[in-house]
Each structure stands twice: as C-alpha cells, then as structure tokens.
Amino acid sequence: MAAPDPNLGVLTAMITPAVLISGAGTLLMSTSTRLGRTTDRVRHLTARFKVLVSESGQQEALAREEKQMIIRQLPRLAHRSRIIQRAMTALYLAVALLVLTSILIGSASLFGTSFGFAPVVLAILGAASLAYGALLLSFETRLSARTTQEEMQFLVNLGRHYAGLYDDQEVKG
Image (cartoon, rainbow, N blue to C red):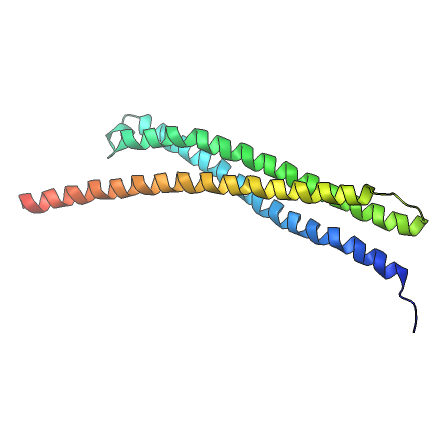
C-alpha cells in the first residue's frame, strides 16, 4: 500500500480557512447591500422630511406624526450604519487573517519550514473576527426590524385616518 501523499494533507489544511473565507465573503456581499439600503433609506427620509416641513406638506394627513417618526428613525439609521461598518471591518479582517493562515500553511510545506502555532493563532483570530461580524449583523437586524415595525404602525394609523374620512362621508351622504 502506498504512503499517503503529504501534499494532500497540506491542501486539506489550506481548504479549511478557504471555506471560512467563502462564508465571510458571502456575508460581506450581503452586508454591503444592507449598508447601501440603509444609506438610501436615510436619503429617502431626508427628502420626505423636506416635503413635510414645506407649506403644502404640513397640510398632509398625519404630517406631524410622520415628521416625529422620521426624527426618531434617523438616529437609529445612523446607529445601524455604524454597526454595519464595524461588521464589514470585522469581516474584512477575518478574510485577511484566514488568507494569511492559508499562506502560512502552504509556505511551511513548500519551503519545509515551521511557523509554529502562528497558523493556528491566525485561524482562531480569523474565526473570532468572523463570529464578531456575524454578531454585529444580528444586532443590526434587530434595529432594522424595530424601524420597520414603527413605520408599519404609522401606515396602519394613516390607513385608519383615511378609513375614518370615508366613514364620515358615508354618514353624511
């Protein structure tokens, strides 16, 4: 029976960080999209606020309540944006550490040297950074849900307002 090829062991060891790199990359793509959506939402609310403070906007149904909702949401959106930026930093750091892990593993085999515990330490730090980024994203998701629920409640109230107007017209007619 032939002895196992030691190069296969090296490749196997290098694949483990690569799987984590792939996961971090997927999270980075979705996180970048989340940051873009948060930025777009801030721009939309800012434009809407400008309309609501205009003379014609002040005449809209529940304009005051909508302005208050926007004022409450803008700091939350800024907080979400900061969390997303921290998460992206953690995820990029994870990718860098995991790539360095693979490089050290491959280099050790190629050059016949030993880097001691360095690859293991880098891999642990990379995995920890990946976990931290994911944890930050879970906090951001909760903030996102909270602002969405607040907006939905405003829309329910707006719907009730308009439904009440139609009910009043039916009674008068």
